[in-house]
Length: 273
Image (tube, rainbow, N blue to C red; front, side, top):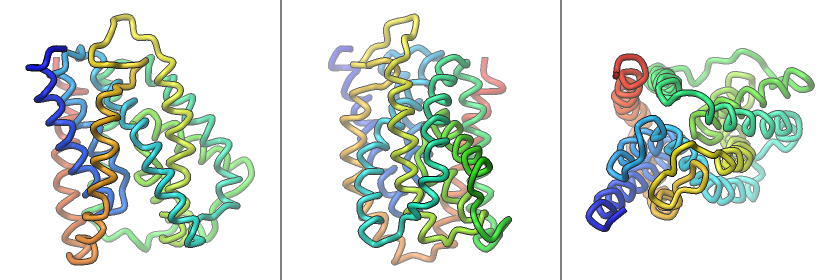
C-alpha cells in the first residue's frame, strides 16, 4: 500500500475511532457496533477484496476491544460492580463460544456476516427507540447447563459480529434479572472473555489470498493501532455528554444511526451483487 492510498484510510480509521469512543461512553454500548461498518467501508480503499472486508472488519474490531475491556473491567471491579458468580457460570461457555464463533466466521461468506450484522443492528435500533428498560423475563439469571448455553450463545454471536460484552450480554443479563449497573460492569469483563479467544481464532485464519495493509490472519494491525487509542481517548467525552443530555433523546439519535447501518449492511448482504 503506497502513501497516497494509506492516508485516506488512516483518516477514516481515526474518525471511526473518535466516533466509536464517544458512542461507547455516551450510551454504554461497545464501540464494535460502530467500528465494524465504518471499518468495512474504509478497508475498500486499502485494497482489501470485497469478499474479505467484512471478515477483516469484524476481526479487527474484536482485537480493538481487548484493551478497552481490560480498562473498563478494572474500573467496574474496583466499584464492586462485577457479578463474579455469574462470570464463573457463564464464562466457560462464553470462552468456548467466542472461539467457535470466530472460527465459524472465517468459513462463511461476507454477505452472510453482513446480513447477520444488519439484523443485529436493527434489533439494537429497535431497543433504542422503544422504552424497554424495565422488561424482565426472569428474576434471576440462569445457572448450570442453561447458564453455560446462554454464555456460549452470547460468545459465539458476539465474536462473529466483532462486538464486545455490551451489545448482547448486557441486555441479556437485564432481561434475566440482573440489575442494570451490575449488568454493565459484568458485561465489561464478558467483553474480555469474548475478545481474547475470538481474536485468537481470527489471528489463526489463513485466507487464500494475501491481504494488504499489515494484516495478520484477518486482523488489521493498522486498524488496531489507529482505532484503539482514539476510541479510549474520546470515551470520557461521551460519558460527560451522557450526563448533560437526555438519555431518551440520545437513544433515539443512536437508534436512527443504527437504522442507517442496518439498511446498508442488509443491502450488502441480501441485495448487492
